[in-house]
Image 1 (cartoon, rainbow, N blue to C red):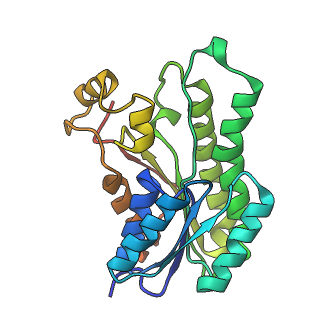
Image 2: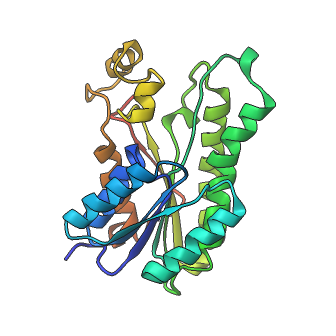
Length: 249
C-alpha cells in the first residue's frame, strides 16, 4: 500500500507537464486522483489511463480555475466520483514573456486570473470538501518569484503573489489542520517550456551553467516533492516554500 492510500487528490492543470507528473505520482502512491484540465481533454484522458494502468484510480474533470462556476462544478463532480478531498495541488498556470513595453491590461488579467485568482478560489471551494481531519494544499510557484528575470514582470509577480497566498493561508487554515505549502520549480523540461523556448535552446544552456547539479529539471523531480508534501511525512510543515531547482542561483 502506498503512503497516500485511501486519500483523494485534486490536481489542477493535470493534463500535461508538471501537473501530469504530479497526478501520476500521487496515483502511484495510492491516492484517487482527479485530473483537472481547462481544454486539453486528450492529455487529461491519457494521464487517467496511465494511472489506471498502474493500478490506480483517476478521473478527468474539465474546468477553468479562473471561472467560479467551473470551480464549483469541479468539486461537485469530485465528490460524486471519490467523496471528500485530502490533497489539493494548485498547479494550473499560464505564462507569456515579453518586455515591459508589450505589457497590456488584457495580458495582466489573463495571467493573474489563472495564476492567482485560480488557486485562491479553488482552495476556497476545496474547504467545503476537505475531511474534518484536514489535509494538504500544495501551490506551484516558481524560482522566478524570487529570482529577477527580464521580460517576465507579469508571470514573476503572479508567482510572488502565490508565495504570499501560501503563507497567509497556512496561518488562516492551520486551525482546520489544513497544511499549505508551495513548490518553486526551477527550469523544467515541459511542453510549455519547449514551446516558449525555455528548454532545448540557449536559455537552457545558460540555466544549466548556473545549476550545480548540471541539468535541466524533469517533471518527476517536482512530482516526488509533491508526494512528500501531500503525505504525513510532511505533517509538521506548513507555510513553506520548497525550491526545487537543482541549486540554481
